[in-house]
Amino acid sequence: MAARRGLSRDEILDAALAIADADGLSGVGMRSVAQQLGVTPMALYRHVGDKGSLLDGLVERVLREIELPPAGLPPADRLRALGSALRTVARRHPQAFGLLLARSAVTPEALQVRDAVVTALADLGVPEEGLSRAERLLSTFALGFAASEANGRFPDQTRADADFAHAMDLISILVEHARTGA
Amino acid sequence: MAARRGLSRDEILDAALAIADADGLSGVGMRSVAQQLGVTPMALYRHVGDKGSLLDGLVERVLREIELPPAGLPPADRLRALGSALRTVARRHPQAFGLLLARSAVTPEALQVRDAVVTALADLGVPEEGLSRAERLLSTFALGFAASEANGRFPDQTRADADFAHAMDLISILVEHARTGA
DNA sequence: ACCTGAACACCGTTCAAGT
DNA sequence: ACCTGAACACCGTTCAAGT
Image (cartoon, rainbow over all chains, first blue to last red; front, side, top):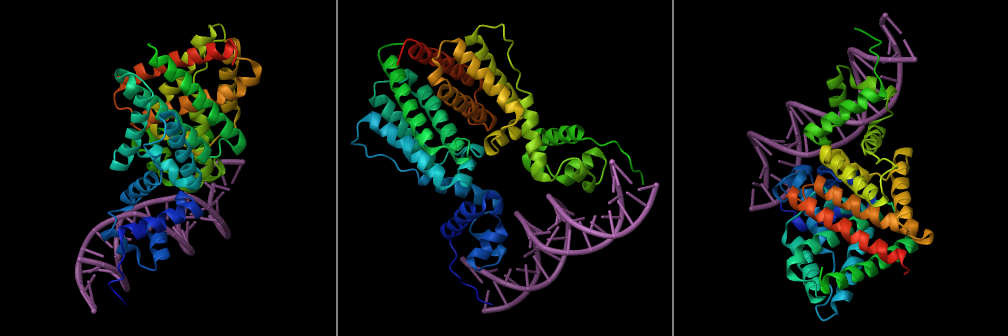
């Protein structure tokens, strides 16, 4: 039949993410994505490499949806906003979010988020030699928390909100500790 | 040929876990597990329900491998031991460990670990009204950390050890905070 | 009760071919 | 350059049958 459908990588990832949201990650396949786009499975291979790359693309997409806070905000608010943005994405794409933990990414998108956290911590007065460790520990917690929500480990959303707010307060205490000397 | 091979659920889960460790989670299937046991795939269905139940069984198995610390130990040491036990299991079964986050379990095995954490926190003097929240936050961090290690997000093991030890110290500070009043 | 053979409806992927 | 048809080597699962 027709050639030249004008298929693009972005279009394919959109379809894959939509399927993941609707039917779960196990519903995402070369065949199902192709069908949603009205195309044969083989057409996808030119645009995304194979199924593994397609899933990597999904990670990239999810990371890009994490909204970075405006640089003008006070650092503590920036941290809160980052956490909140992470949780928002986790709840919007609960299935695809799991991929973040399964496939550790070092893409530009991932680095951008990391830098935002490091900068906020530095602006809060965390001494430079403890900065990267603080970022790792904080990001690990936030990632674990968001993943837990995505997987339904925290079924009560109101309580999850309160838990997260409390965790942010605890982090302030620790930052204060780091700031005034180990 | 022969009937009555004496197949058991435990034997099947052992084989599945071994395959996960060797070939990754994607290598675990009804057919591969059956082959490793010298049996046809159909023979498994009587003992584990289907593939989903097989994976649930794997979670159960992984949780059971988390060694609970002796009750005689001081509570702070118990907490450290629990964290260390979790990380040990995560590194022993990096692939299967990911299932812990993907399939939230409320099995007896999961509750046993949870209770050990709660008891240790209570013994440390965390007031009762903050106990379950403290457990949730602490477990979330520990789970996220262990999962990160399992997925290769922390490639430097020595640094991961130092990070984790540091995190435990921070937790002590927070516990002290909770103990002496909000 | 426990296991098998054959069969069904699926996968991801390759490769030659069409436009 | 971009897409398709046919084909290959896989999946999980059911169901009737064997012992």
